Length: 175
Image (cartoon, rainbow, N blue to C red; front, side, top):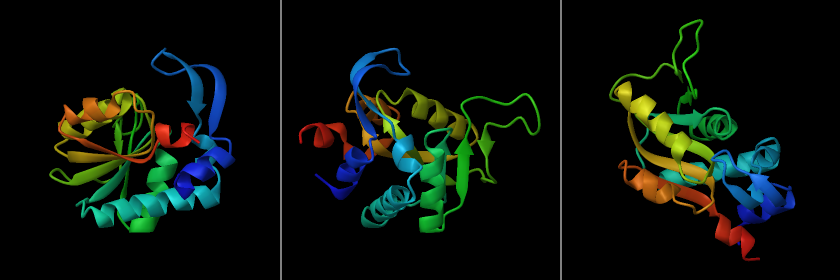
């Protein structure tokens, strides 16, 4: 088990019981990454892991993007760690102000690596990818803190996007 996986368990980010996920599906465990993203030591560790993935895989990116709300703390931390500018993708367009769904000064033709907290089926990150692509922005990689291994990788692959988990739920649950 990786140090990050150990820290996620130790901080209480993995809870056991009866839970209903955002998809409506029932689960015997819940991944509460907010427990980790509000802990500065673990948040820094997540940012360092994201930076290492970008470097070791030579992933080109003009921006780090976070899907509101869960991915934003990790994206902010990764932006600070890598020096890449930040973009935030809202789940829906606001009725006021600039009314945009993408927060950040992103130019068309730029590439964004999205950061997400937990991936189950990938539906929320797929919506963010569609939003960015509709703005002329390239997304080819999503880095997720925990992959629940319930189809997100396959669904993202179908959209031409690689899912890169920092931790797989099987790594956490096996110990």
